[in-house]
Length: 541
Image (cartoon, rainbow, N blue to C red; front, top):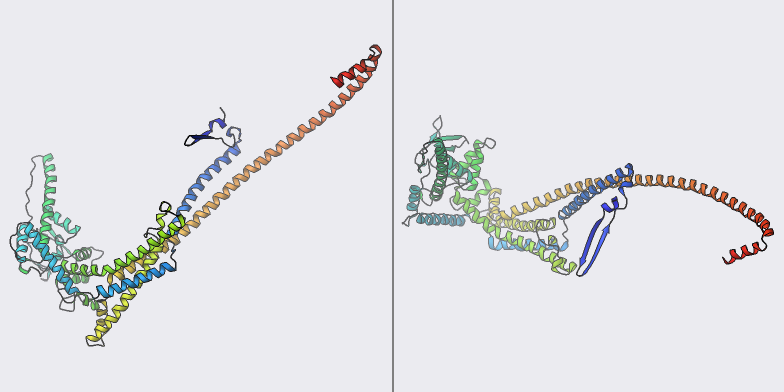
């Protein structure tokens, strides 16, 4: 069996009752190739495989570059501007002014109702908030609360107090770090506090006994230790949740007010401030003041300048209730921002779907990647314009209203008062969304530039591979030319031999004919009529 037979490939194609079978054969027999051509064809095959990978990578880069390219036209820009204007008007009319006083009242009510509901589920039968808090404090004691007392430094200055220990004690933080610290306390017998300088203190405390299994030998002790660990963690988590519920509304002596627990933002800031890389005395002190006394120009409060206006009208102690109040206002501000998002993306979706249907004719042929209003530079650019328009309208209204309010307060107002009144009208969610859109747009532009440079490198690689393939093809042609030259020389030599053979044969035939003529005359003497008979034979054969 030769190479042609070995490389034969069958490819049957069936269509209902009709079947066609194709057979493919190689263009050359590799057994008859010399070593040079074998090397050439092997290298060409390797180059073809590399070109296939390069072309695939090039296609992926083209797709990615197209996704990172802005294809928006005038209609897209006009729609984005209109959506931004509409949502800016909605923000002015329906969202209006920042109202911390009302938001704080709502958050206080929510916390109080949540604490009362939780306490009744745990068995509390009264109707007073202070009673519910006292009930939860006794039912869910947290290690260290009963043992805690003010901590003083060497000079006698208080560095951790009962008013700030909810912030300083990580066990009171409603974060993962707080939970971990609370569990560690059960095994170490000491709680970790961070004072106003960011210095860590381990304070011995009385750990609640949750009941432990005791092993009698190493194996049972090991398993008992594991079981005790899980029981301790489970009980600690349950106790921690109940205790934090009581602390959210303050202590039983100041239910509904007092020092609550820090929210997630304040807890995170305090935990970061305890790290060596973020450790800063003034920052720690400001965190404590904000948690204990609030934000404003009062004694020991944190003065944020124009931003103080955002926290006027209610207690601004930066605990969980204040964070909930801020979140309440941000949710109100998010409404027109979300509407803007829906309008722009909805327009993009509907328009691109109509364009796809017009081009392809039906839904089955729609390229949904071109329709989905996410993850491409065009929709990002539209959102940048829409949120930019929204923010421009919002800031213009805030500046006008801020100036009017400043005049009403007895203007001309100083810059701090003007900016404070202006901030009450600013939609911070909208500003944040605009910043995100700009960063995303710029980021996509940078990625597009990087991908284009990468595409140039890939195209250069493709060019080099193609040139190499051409060189191998040329080498194959030169070998073919050499083989052809050898064949031509061989044909010439054979032609010369054929001509010589023809001349010799011609002379031999001529001599034989002359000899026949001479012999025929002699034969005619002995055989009368022989010439005539031979002529007839040759003629009628």
